[in-house]
Image 1 (cartoon, rainbow, N blue to C red):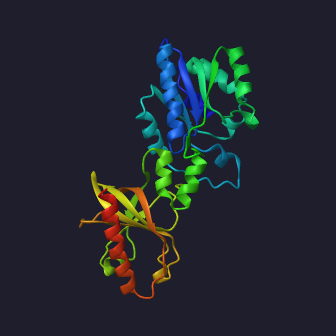
Image 2: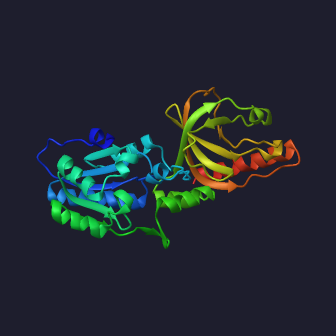
Image 3: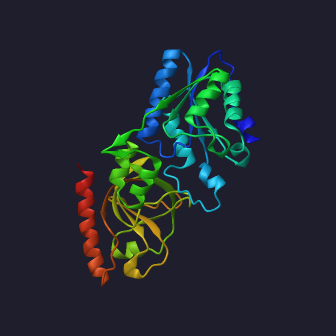
Length: 306
């Protein structure tokens, strides 16, 4: 079973305060859990520890599930590691792990990490057939020698912050709302690949971005964005859609870097989404499209200068 290979055995003579979850997005709700783990661990002179599943359980257990991730696995782990936790432990969620009873998994955490306290969100469940509810975990803790603390939900403008709410905002193009829930701008990263060069013909040479198919992509439209490439930051305009003016079929992500002239084919680029400017429209001719694109660039400059 992979969990036995991936879960470390601590050699330090300290117990741990542990939290567990997918943590997709590492949003403000997750950050509240992390802050409480660190505070409790400091008060107990324990190690603050977080276990993150590299796959969403629903993606593994449901044949019909098509989970799109807010953050890539590498980016998620990087964000978690930069949060000040003593231990960040990525675990592969697979069928074998899903069959572990809640008590068996807790016993592993007790044996391997010397878990003294488990900190969970209010709606957290774990173990085979989701049997490990908070009440069940408390009973297991009484038997194994750890306590359980539940963190209240975090809300923003009367909306409960969750990965589901963030996915909904991103899909509906409301990247500003997603940023409020995340505590930072939503971003995508990928490789610059060759496109049809129509942007260059129109006077707006764009970088076509190829991203992992598991990543969540905002709804179609034009966005004010930041672009990071070769350790430099650029104001940019990003278009997502199928180029309706040209009767396109494929859905593309194209980025126009303002005040930039260079060859970045094959380079990795990260795009941070600041604001949705408009939807995608089919224009009668290229002249109308160019005029609108010039208006878009003016809006982008205004937004990103704030």
